[in-house]
Image (cartoon, rainbow, N blue to C red):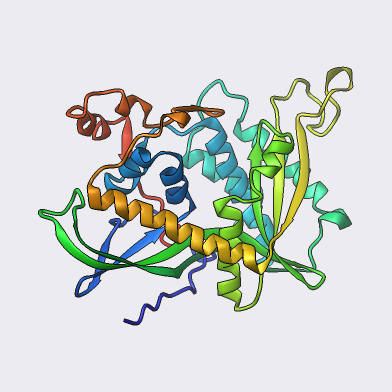
Length: 344
């Protein structure tokens, strides 16, 4: 069967104002074949805790509450996008940041305010004018993609919550999707660039991305999009702490301590073997997802009920009796999953 996907999607056109429920995990193609479109967020939930993947991918529900860090990072991303678009920008970075906070109000009494985000953007505009932050070319900005990854045999009856009865599934055609912040060129090297915000910092922050699903997966996708090797990654990082004074964010803190804002970049180069390993490894992870579907059970992994960023968003669901969990997921504490990198 031919499995052709349109990879021309880009976000330079105006985005739809109405967001819709994420597509079902399995979409019928023809005969006994189905399509499954996954992204980095989906894979991370599966590898962290299959039960959270069940809530997110099958029930298509996610916590209504958005953390201050998530809102702040999204707003800064919106401003950086307009900056990188240059003459193709649809607004100024400041306008994009302000609009993002208007649509996604930040939690009250948190230091990550719209004013702080605008100040960080101003500091970045100064920093990006220095030669060591320059690019020879910006090829793509906010490039959405949906690319064929693999075809997995199933040959079993599967059940989704929205299906009236189990359906026989012969094969699942898997597509990998996402949205790349930018693809840039420095000299003769092509790099995937991704913006990263953190309040923690440290060497572990950088090293956590070296073998990450996202970094290698985006290089793999960029290679498919451009039809040439893209084996390098650059993280455009912002280490942001609560400001303690009224001066510039990049000024030293009290008694010569670290400033509230540190901007830096980190680089990874991947071999062809490493990107090929990512492709195989990701396919095997998705096979595990299909195995959970086949046996109709998604196990709980309790290691990450509480992590460095707090409790899992589904922790309160899992603490309830099984008969109560669907009601809690349907409550106002949770909302429909609408994230789809190629459609939002």
